[in-house]
Length: 140
Image: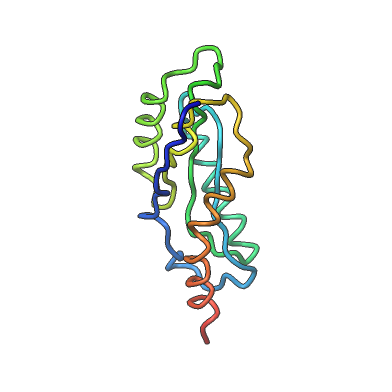
């Protein structure tokens, strides 16, 4: 049985949007999973559109994560994990809030991982930051 690799969740781009007042409805972190084979302009645009919509609805968006699937996914023509990670890194360079989470791509024992497993991982790391964000955005 292969051992799962524990990697820290990147947080360097997580922040309260300084140009945004509010967060009356709460905070959000965007997560997109997929092969990202390759990541495209529209993948990043999806994050921007979601962030804009959530902010219009009163949410404070702390950041976003691209989470590529592992090599066991076996999609026809799937580039290696190393190549897809590098492509995602390059794609995220131009974003002020989207990062790559390498955790899912490092799991080699299964082609399928529940989305909830990934969401729970992100929530466990980001929740303390969300509480800090609420203190900032709810301050008089």
